[in-house]
Length: 157
Length: 169
Image (cartoon, rainbow over all chains, first blue to last red):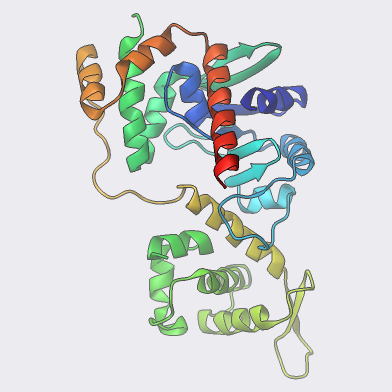
């Protein structure tokens, strides 16, 4: 599923960096995550591509009662750049900013390339993930931080 | 809802909510309906410079209108020589999006001091993780896998979880 989502993003030329739990998994985390967190480029043409994909996947807000008003378009991204969505392909968290890192350009600068099958994408580096988890300072992030620091300690210098 | 959640969902600062309590009443419950009223109030105040008390009354009127029309017309004087249109659906959609984000753990401010960036020895991080209950053998096993294998393993775990949920629901 994650592979499928990443392949579709790559295929449609959507510029985004994988952050959060899936990025941690790529670096060796054993924690389970059910959603894909992406820091996206807020350039209008990128938003348009993202919107088109999300419309195809019937995206809707996650964790809210059904029936609340929602529009999947560029205006929604401008009004609420942080979106937590459920789609036909799985849950997606779309962020314009990564705490402690910055926007897409900054996230891209501290990301690493990954190639899985024919899909190419970028994910935050382990050090950047640790910085982000330290900055958000939520209880669940602190638990995750301990694991990420252990992964870094296990890596050969 | 807490004050933090209400202000995040409404898209305003907690201070703005507290400062306006004499307008909307301190006894008003912190719930979605109040967040919607505050979001509309804030839009009217910040975008048109309408005084807070007037903006709040207009917000209450706007929300009482039928929700069907995408743009809610709101007469600002009895003869309707001046009329105001609010894109209520858009404002409410933004409130819903922020509520969704809050429900997934975004937006909440944590209490306490931030984690200090200390230089730890390699062994410290492993000891700390082991003390916390992290299974280091799992991390060591993952270290032997490629990123592709790790991602596929996560995909399989997610499939298994979804199937288990489907069977038990």
